[in-house]
Length: 180
Image 1 (cartoon, rainbow, N blue to C red):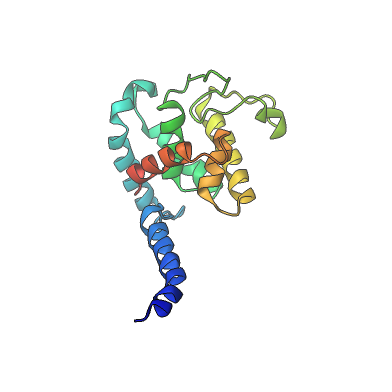
Image 2: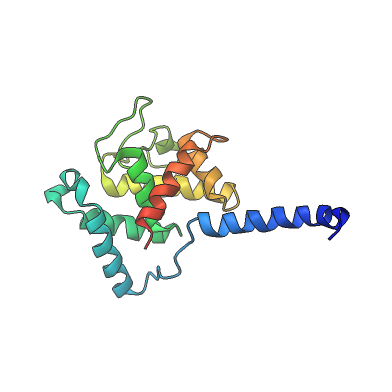
């Protein structure tokens, strides 16, 4: 091939490289998450319970299943991968429901209290797992819609770090870990 022909292929190589990186490094949305299939949910719950064993001290009666059920059901309601929610919880609070950040974010998904009136939930208790996860999923879904499905930008917005990839990269690492 001549130099001119090789130069014409450079943009094609860049597109192919981007596509390969996107396909192999971005967690895919599992097609297996069917809300109406109790077998898949049971297998998912069992697998994730084992993965959460290092954090059992944070669970009521050292049992992660109630929390995992909340994560699964709430993620399904918001059309989010439940592994993504586990990854956000892992990065935000390490599964400590009583975690409070230095800027005032509260609970498992580290929801900022200013969201309560915004989401018309002024009486919500951010220390209650179901309420915290519900609000966190609502916020994440809102950002994901705003960013046209771009998980990196949605996660950065969730963390208040738009334009910086450190947070979204951490979440993606754990998303891969919890991937089913």
